[in-house]
Image (cartoon, rainbow, N blue to C red):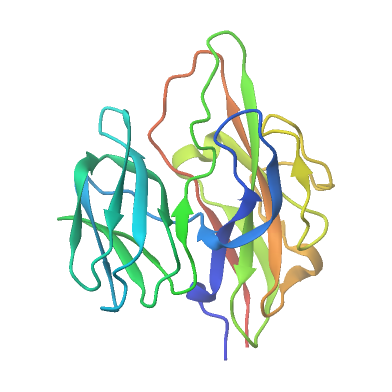
Length: 247
């Protein structure tokens, strides 16, 4: 069976700090994705499952209002019945399920675009560089790790490469591929410079180690966010693309 675009998933690392003192990086967390859409306009969020059996889990939302104020709340799933958030979200920072689901969990704006689905066996999604802020006096640089994984059970992606999409925060973020696949390297905190990236940081394209992602294989990607002193808050996004050849 050929590798299709839905087989190629960007996941977070096991350590994704929300401060500048905790460890960052580590191995892949195949339960938390780093890919989703924000509401296309400020909106309440609705959640529901494809299975009527999903009634015991709580789904916790973290985000910001249109004015940039941090908000969060917990919603109790009610099977296939739509559950609506109390708050109106301008953007989503992360969403966590208290336990994996029987069905696929859909997260959407109540009257706008679908944000994402949480597949069976996974437990949420999140934004890298959570609450990373500029300093009033000095430039700041942050590093966080994500992974690209081939979830196809039989087929490989060959001639595989990562490319930065020239939209959103592309001018602020560079990326570097780890020299070894499935590397669990950590850094002391997200302001520490990672090693094991001989190719250095840039905006790509960059070939994946050995040029291929075998079935179930994954590759670590360090992202580098550079903020100038006094830089204002940015409501934007960052995106990379994985491409290659399949049979």
